[in-house]
Length: 257
Ligand code: CA
Image 1 (spheres, rainbow, N blue to C red):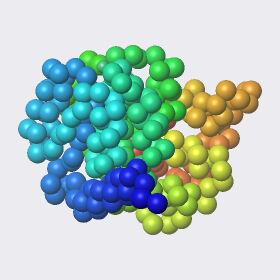
Image 2 (cartoon, helix red, strand yellow):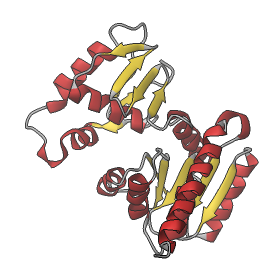
Image 3 (cartoon, rainbow, N blue to C red):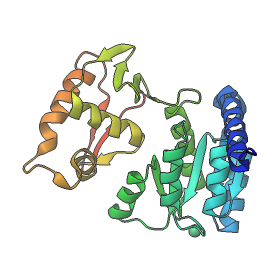
C-alpha cells in the first residue's frame, strides 16, 4: 500500500513546527527584541504597528486574515500574538481557541478590538486571550502590554507565569514567592492565577467571580473569604504585599513586590 501523503505531510509539518519552537525557545527576548505576530485586516493599522515595533528593536510578522494568522502562529510561535477580533476567514476568538487547542506552548495573546463591553472581554478571555486592548489605543500602551505579556510568559517555560517575586507553574498548579512554596487551596490558587494572568491589569470583583464560578456564583460575597485566605498565604509571610486593592476598580498584583 502506498504511503498516505496526508500522513507524510503532517509529519513534516510537525517537524517544522518543532524546529520553529526550538528556534523560538533559543531566542532571548531581552537580548534581541520580541518577535510579534500581528493578525489584523486593516492595512494602515498593520503598518502603524509594524513601524512601532521595529522602531523599538522588535520584529513583527503579519497576517491579514485569521487562517493565515493561525498557520503562522502554529508554524513559528511568536513571543506575543497581537490579534484583531473581527477578521475575515476565521475571527479572532476562533483563532485564539484553535491556537490554545493545537499549540503545545502558551503563546501570549493580546486581543485588539473596537468592542468594549464586559461581555466581549469575557468572551475573549474564555477563548484564551491574555490581555485586551480597545481601539483606538496608544502605541506606547500596546508596546508596554506586549512587553509585560512576554515577561509573564517567559520563552522556554511554556507553563510558567512570572510576576515579580511570584512564580506559578500552571502544569503542576504550584505557586511560589521568592522561591518559597505557597500552600494554597483550590479557590485561592485560582484567584491568584486569574490575577497573574491579567497582570498588569486589575480585575474587577465581577470579573473574578465570573472566572471562579462562571454563571453559578454563590450568593452574598463569595470573594471575601477567598481573598482573605489568599492574602494570608501570599502576603503575610513577606515584607511587601503583592495583592493590591484598587479603589473603585478591583484587585491587581504588584509586579515590583
Ligand atoms: Ca478587523
